[in-house]
Image (cartoon, rainbow, N blue to C red; front, side):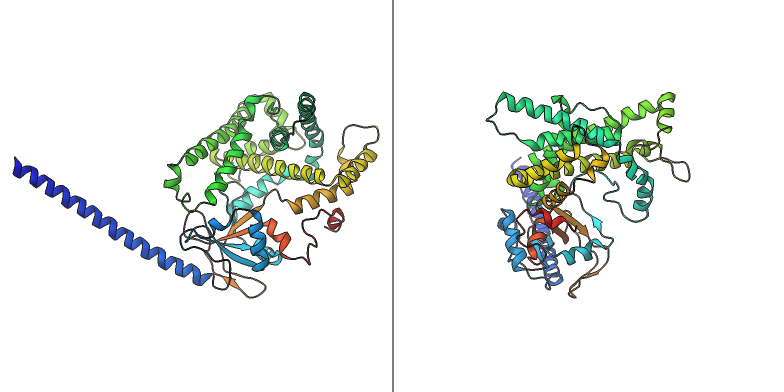
Length: 438
């Protein structure tokens, strides 16, 4: 009995030793691979000097505020590497000519939000096919009747603000949440012909909350050196919250698609849609057929709806909120915009399509506000071909990023406006006349 116990203990010890040996060998091999990979990346980026980085943390511990990018953009003009951890660099572009070179190439747009393979992230033949299919939804004339529908959504938002201010005139108002609901309501009406009550029904604002959660969680993940691994991230609280937020967002789009599909089963409703002078976005998706008579798959359909709804309402809400913020900071410009619009409307309360082209000063203020605070602060690309910039510096094919050992083209628009005083004098100042020629 004692002999059996000793034999079992010895066997267990040997197994533990063997496992420890395997783990040690794996760590040594992995460390060697990471070392050579970092050396290769350093050699690739040796023509792009940048801020010093830690071999493990990269520059993550140095980036706490937007002002850090401003300092780096001044110190390292045109472009510089920024390391997300010790083995995941990004090429940060801070010069408009560099950005122009990159945007003119057929690189892949990188997103950190799972909205599927929609038009926004497609490339190649499938992009051309989808783009040709969806072009009628963006016809200039189709936008005209949307003015009244958007105006109705804005009125609902303004009525809410009046009630909230009446309840407590001294309390500040968080506008972004309300603007997000308004833009979601507008896009649901215009692009999907969906009568939404998301602005007034508290139970309907779950989609906006889910999108905001996804945006925050994605930012936290991208700026972390340890959460980029999918397995590690899925085990964290943030990973589980992100999965839940994605499920809520997808549930919303699936509900919109399902209700429209159900309505199309009604012959009268189908006939009504087919008689429209121009179909809306969802009509086109559901009725689209290729040369073989095959429509979009459920996966492609949801990807396009997810892309349009997510990107369409969130970026618009961000842009509008920043415009309101800029006007509040510059009451003299706000007053001029108010006077211009009052002169155009006269005794009318509703804005018409033709009025928009007459709002020249307001348009300049909007453009200048968007220059100061872009609704999409960062854009990334994956290189599909080698690229050479105007100063002769080059980068090879295959540099990319997304939870692997790669290099990202990372373009923060807030650093572009600071990088060249000859392009934007006093870049932090709002000067409406600056946008006159743009």
